[in-house]
Length: 107
Image (tube, rainbow, N blue to C red; front, side):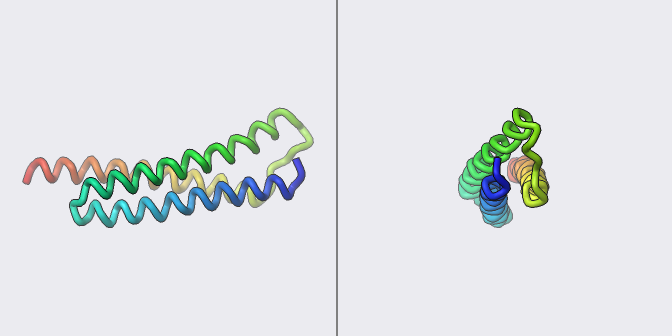
């Protein structure tokens, strides 16, 4: 895989992960307003973006496993770091949704 192609996939990861982060933040804003419907919709959209980012990551990883001459670039390493961070943010956002749901049930 040429470095240009790897970097294109890395940018795809970063872009989808960044879009997911934006959607997560929008969803959390809705959660703070106790607007569960909009929160759920934003998290669903964010999940779709994370799936797309993960697909791009998998393309590169498969090629590095199948072809020893393919070595990840610094940009790919950055993309993986970005994706993992935002996946963690997604998981925390889901947990916050559960906490708010418990609070709503107690009110």
